[in-house]
Image: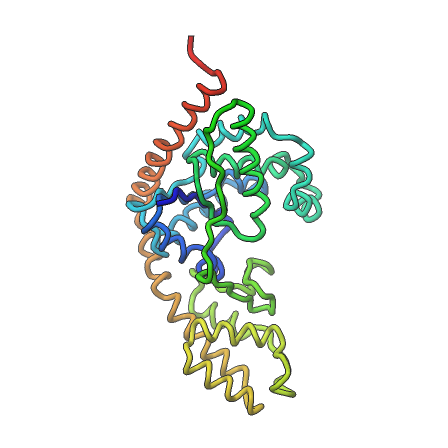
Length: 331
């Protein structure tokens, strides 16, 4: 049994790419590992959300995590800001982090290009906060996407640096959790190879989207003027629709539309209608669970209190030992 840590920023609803890319696998992981899943509300402060946005988004992600099958009895599900030990470790790690290595971080360079009016210190020290999230529980494995691999490498750097500086073998070196072939990439409706929240989410299908919204989004999906030579590669937008059809409509529907495409008689509108109804059928159980959870304030309070208690038990032990190693001792 490995100790696994993973977090997700509360930036709004989860989409199908989030579900198949990670959350579906989180549900499997909790059966075999000691898992800590947290809602990273500290991290979201780099974009300066309003209090109403922040609280609402945290609740949204919590509800959706639970609706997707995360079990607070099997895994530790907590809100990052409920764990003050994380902030303390973040401060201590910053003391041994260097400006040069943080400035070279790819995500920091990207952020200062995209938001030059808001280059705050939180963006610069994002890797140390992420490292604190991971090593506060002495995690052995971390599920990360390609864009977070450098941050995981820096977490290993900070853990090893602490061990060398204080001549201890305290922090393990966390490695990436490998989902293998179970990791599915869901393409976007805008023709992009990966579903994302770009364009205000118009190209993504969210778990909370109503049937009407799903139909509207799918019918607007990018296609082309139709097959000219069926033996030639399909346009990215059309290929995306067939990929989605394979995931949500099954082999019979896929073979039907593949045959129509090869014969040159396909009508993309019919394909989209089929796809929309099948996505609605897939997402309906999630919407029903989310609606029930969203109004159950007592249960959500119970879940977050339990998660905070379990997370503090782990993190508190780590911080007490770190303080002793560094030399923070009472007289």
